[in-house]
Length: 118
Image 1 (cartoon, one colour):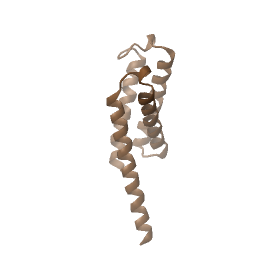
Image 2 (tube, rainbow, N blue to C red):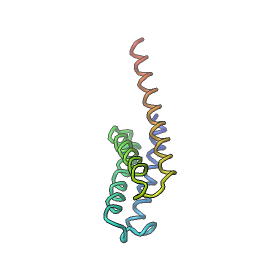
Image 3 (cartoon, rainbow, N blue to C red):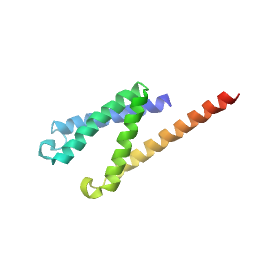
Image 4 (cartoon, rainbow, N blue to C red):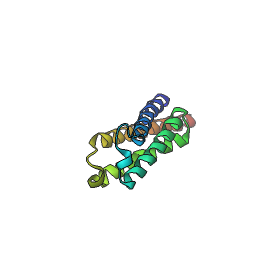
């Protein structure tokens, strides 16, 4: 689980870095975006950094930030396709990372439960 959290941290730091590029108009034209898009990118910037740092340090708040970002992006990209466009790669990424996280957590809790019974 520790290695998986570090891998997730690297991915979320990459996301943070890409959003910083967006804010400085080095990747997208942030300055020309509608206000809702600007708020969305600012939210992702802050929470991607929180997730990256928290996951790297293996803190619960990092895991919660990861879950919040992943679920909010799934809701946005599946539920509001007309506004956000087709984001199949991001949808797949978040489904895979959340599913893998849940499997690791379940195994961790099952092992803890077994050890306490013996």
